Structure formats: structure tokens, C-alpha cells
Image 1 (tube, rainbow, N blue to C red):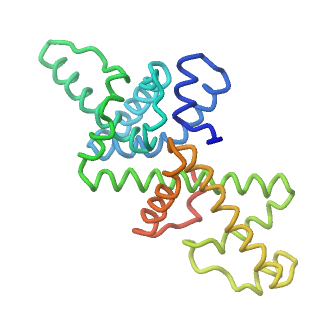
Image 2 (cartoon, rainbow, N blue to C red; image 1 turned 135 degrees about the vertical axis):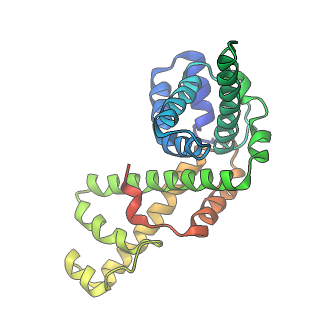
Length: 244
């Protein structure tokens, strides 16, 4: 069975008031806060304005879902968020303009935001889409690394993780294997095996993260490939993925 996705969490949380789903959805909103706010800042809003608009957009998602009739073929959650946010900002500009002229416009509903969000996303300037996709990719990668790190912590191997992560692709020049092996208290062969195991764990966690952002199994590999293309375009420093 295809696992629970962000789509189904959003629909279940808003339709049924399911506490577990709502908590998971709130965590999802915290996770995507950075990419959404960064996109808004790129539209020329100040830091405080971007904070407020991000909060307002996510509250709409939580309170008045666009997914009251879940569609299993809805597509990628990333594309929905970007398209819905672009539409939200467009309505926000119209509302502010009307207010300055002495008129008033009601806040846009997320039901309206969800309509044709994918088409809006496709029509956005490529530079905006690329910036959002990179922020999204870093968010996915950060979540995957945090998941792997937690596995090491739970196994009592936190110090080993700190040594091994220097050998992940995208980091600066890692230390010599001899030096790292000595710090870890193991042979070079054993360290090499641990590095390969860590890379497999990261790939598995990235896959799990991406799986939750699509609506059908056939989209998983496509989305993972897109993620890595985005990261490779400008390079990725794995040291920064632990930052909030």
C-alpha cells in the first residue's frame, strides 16, 4: 500500500479534525516555512512582511483546506505549495491595492488557491521556481540527515555520526581516512564500510521524505532525480543542513 502522504494528511486533518494528522501537518508547515518565506522575500517583501504572509498562508492551509475532495492524482506537493503561494500573493496584492483605494476585498480562500495551482506554478519565472526548488531540496535533505542522525543517537553512536558526515558528497574536502579511523577507534576498512552504510541510510531517508510529497508511486523516482539535479546545479554543503 502506498504510504501516507502530505496530501492525505492535509485532507484528513481538515476534514475530520484528526489530532495526530493535524500535529503531523503542523510539523509539515514548520518544515516548509523556510522555502515559502524565502520565495516571498524574493518578491520584494520585507523580512517582517514575509514572516506575516508565510504565517497567514500556512494558517489557511490548516484551517480551510483546498483538499476537501482528495484527488489521488493531484501531483507533487511541492508544485501545489508554490502555485498556491503565488496565487495567494497575487490576491494579497489586489487586496492591499483595494484597501489603499478605500475599498475592501475578502481574504482569498485556500479552495481558490488550490484551483489551477499547478498551472500557476508552471507559468512562474524560471528563476523563482529554481530558487524555491533549491530551498525545497535543502529542506528535504536536512530532514533526511536529521532522521539519520537521530538513528545514530538512539544507537549511542552520536560521535561516530559527527565523524562520518564529513564523508558525505557535497561536503568540503574530508579528512584522511587514517585520521578519521583513528578518531573513530576503528580500522580503515571498518570506517569505509560505515561511510557506505551512512550514504545508503541518507538515500533511504531522502526517498522516504520524497515519497510523502507525491501522490503516486511513479512520481517518486522523478522527484528524487529532480532533487539531486537541483542540488548539483549549485553544489551543496552538507555541513549547513543541520542549521535551522
